[in-house]
Image (cartoon, rainbow, N blue to C red):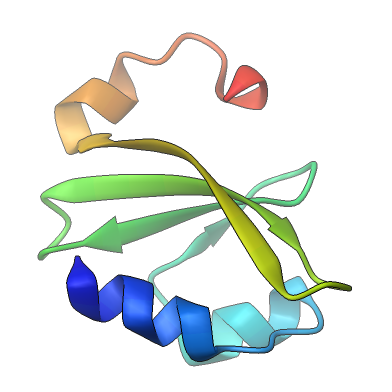
Length: 76
């Protein structure tokens, strides 16, 4: 996960399309949320992305199973 963090910290994506071009396994959700599959899809990280300020707020880190148990992804 350190590699993911360092990669994202140095990125300057201006749109979801740019992010997806760099990280094809990322899932773009509505309301500027992105789901990243890390460690061979064992873990998922959900972030709220601000493309103007090039910032990310981590909203969830957990296993794939824990992610599947989330009832409403819009509230994370």
